Length: 540
Ligand code: ADP
Image 1 (cartoon, protein in one colour):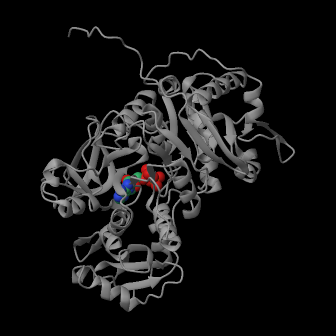
Image 2 (cartoon, helix red, strand yellow; image 1 turned 180 degrees about the vertical axis):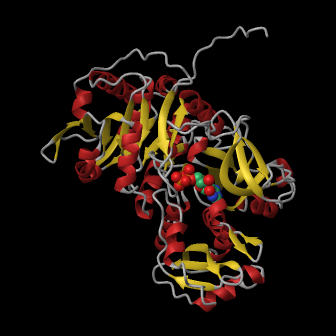
Image 3 (cartoon, rainbow, N blue to C red; image 1 turned 30 degrees about the vertical axis):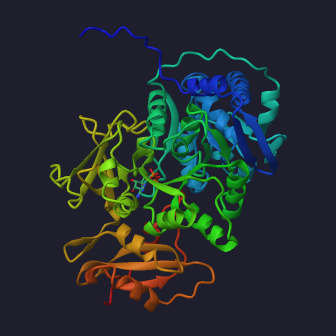
């Protein structure tokens, strides 16, 4: 080998903020806050605040490699920690506050942070769990006032900490392979597992996701992440936005239709992203109020399958393009994104829409895909043959935090736990999570496909399909429907809607009207549903 003669400057997250502050210093960052008015700043000011924050962290004893945890919403203060903590070579452990107490305590005692930053909303949670947090030495409330925790633990005030420092800090050089973010999966089966993103993975992911074949950002974009900063770093939007000089709008926890609409219109949001449930609420708000989504051009949706009806409504009623993504905490998290290709465009608008709306996304540079059968052999890339989805690349997990062995095999392939198909254009379609596949009479029924069809029926807000034990067929699908408020909808209406659209043997054995439980990451909680209706079909 002849060594390359270019510079070996490390890929560091802090350089993204440094770039934005230098090249786009006046570009605004707008943030809602808990119980405080909207805060307005810009990349230059936020860099100065991140510098102050870093100095405050050093005084609190935080060193390279230490973990710092957050229980926090989408605000500019949380955004500052996204840079200050990795900027020091420390690791930000973003904890999902929607998890059960037991899981939160598990995560904190597994990640072992020295400092915990939290929003005021979580004061009761922190009071409750503080005695069980084995390693937290300092609590800091992300607010402009002083807080006391249960008279025992004193919480410092974030704004006071920043006010005691001055601007300017010479960031250390951090190894690009150093851990930067520690995000735990929700642990629906077993304990949560920690995924430790490196500086390099986060920077490459930010560059990859900015491409025109992905989010396609430029400095005219106004980006509002409606996926949570605590869930896989809000799909990397806090990095991709500054890397492209985009204005950033942070909605705190206020993700209801009316609150989003206010920010979208008043701040000129062009691009937003979130799980389907958020957009169901948003579309319902537009429908009820007759309002229009301002300058909004693109909405990226993922985390669960995007209902075709949702993508169609966004485009046909409001001229907004839906980009479906598939990814997971283990892939930093972007895996694939559904964007057009010339070959598909040639087939006409309808065919193109169909391809985009019914597939999770297309192969992107930076993440390789394979679909394999039970023996590990590749299945044909024909859009029909399905198998286990394996992924590999520089922002894919190798090993869970503190796990004794690798999660990926010796060639780097990581089994996602999803079942999918791949076609000749590189489009990937998830048919199910392995554990949610319905096995009926030796054949597979895709719960995702059935849900996607059922949610298109007028009046349906959420459709969930689970396989329940059946004496003759092993499992049969059951459809649980949560209707829109005030909708009058009968089982017969639903079955009549499904009849021409699904194969007879896919028709659910029962249609139930009930509330649909969601997990801490906004997915349909099928485990709860399966338990709830466990013996429904046992006498069939
Ligand atoms: P959790 O902690 O809830 O598992 P993740 O975000 O890591 O959180 O979940 C990743 C999983 O979400 C994927 O393996 C896949 O099953 C599902 N998922 C993500 N995006 C999509 C999508 N567009 N369509 C269908 N399923 C998706």
